Length: 379
Length: 259
Ligand SMILES: Nc1ncnc2c1ncn2[C@@H]1O[C@H](COP(=O)(O)OP(=O)(O)O)[C@@H](O)[C@H]1O
Ligand SMILES: [Mg+2]
Picture 1: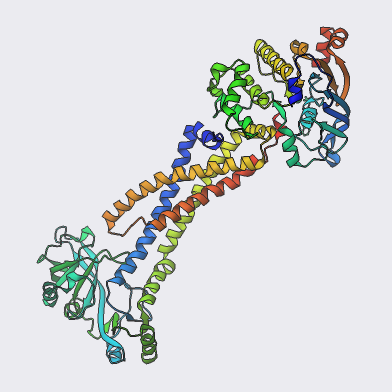
Picture 2: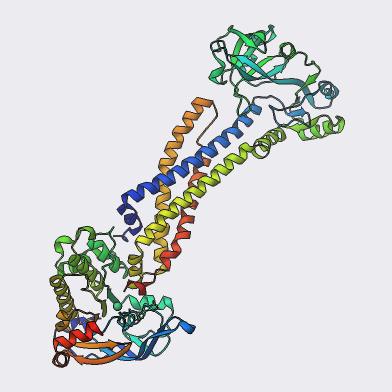
């Protein structure tokens, strides 16, 4: 036989209080999961986006912030470095927002547009590389549309006609990319069409220069060479630096990263306060009994253990429902927004650890009272 | 413990005393706020004796009990409990002295979340006897007439039953010394009487020493000896016969309740 599980029995005895405690912890856990989920989705969309761009080195304007807020720079910079040792290919990328009219509701909404040379293998998605897609890109006023665009943009049937930027536009095909936090939907069109849609924007100004290096070439060394060769109106970044730059922008420069971090901290504090309240009330109600245990010969350490056990039990009991609901909400969010909200093992472990810390912290704050229970005061 | 348990109901002259107090003083507070509560207490409780302590409210009875029970640190005089000098002991050492003492309080102080047996088992667990804790708890509850209430929680027990569970918890480890502070105060006349009679019976069986504070003059007859504390001083110390013959009920009442 084992020790009487006093912590568990004490918690189970006050059913209402236990339910409130579990709901409180569960709610805090859920909030933490959602905040981390959104933050993770943001980071993931940024990264998956670059995963589909087939380039090793990027040229941008030094004034560009991230992929969806770039400043144009002269296309001639690409031509200047095309002959550098180790460079396989250079490709221009044009980017703008375009108002896309939903053909059913006739409501317009901003779409993010990539303009490419149809001959260039800019994107990794296989659907963009089929002969049919190539042919569609070459056709005037024809675009490929992102399957993961929000529903509000309307149907995506091939050959469907609608209006974009006051011009007639034809859907020539589909692909899957996802616009992440920056865009509700994306389009790919040829550079020729791009110039038409965004007239009077000149052909000579591009938003991103994509550079593929030869197999086995030293990317860092080439980037260093390019930095030396190019004037200050372009910035040279490797793929890793580019991703890092965008992550940094979202996390630090915009309120988004801050809001989610704040969300996690606030949820953590709310959880800590709830658990503290519960444990404190529990200790207060059992003060005489705890003092009696001390009079019988139990040590302060035993009472310390009881309170910490109660904290850990609340952590586990609250974590499970919080996690289950979070999995459900992740799915809902995925379906409603196409954001990649995924319950990773890492996040599971992280949030469980946070929950344990949250409850133990409350336990440590409230335990003083139990440990200082004065056995002389119960007579 | 073995010798004390083997001595039957006939009192044996104890070789060592359960409690030996010499020149004990005790004050609450410090500096200007110091309030002395106990003055020059000298008291010896031989093993196996049932002693009742009376005295007006505020005279220091509870304080003396908590000192003997090693619940407070003492600095002046000498206080030996079960052969161990308590004066000057650290808090941690005091905890181990307590494990040989059974405490019974005015309130039962049972965990509402635990059954009668589990409350008693909490005491057995202190001795590390996990294997037999259930049987020990059931046995002592049975002796206290609670064999059909073993798995009830305090919420469904009467006041007298709860106090008997508390007594079972205090006695289950066969403590050599039992300290009780008005154990019948919260009980009606009959249950109070029953509880004290049971305590007396168990104490005599195992040669326990009992020091009990009470205002209840209907239970004085269980005592071998009655001591009286007034304003922090031991006023009289007599055996039951002398006490009864020198205190007619009226004056007894006056001394105990009006002073
Ligand atoms: N923790 C304490 N701090 C200060 N004074 C106390 C404390 N406990 C008791 N006293 C005082 O000590 C005196 C004796 O109290 P107590 O031992 O409880 O008396 P009794 O049990 O005989 O009624 C009283 O005057 C009381 O006010
Ligand atoms: Mg008192």
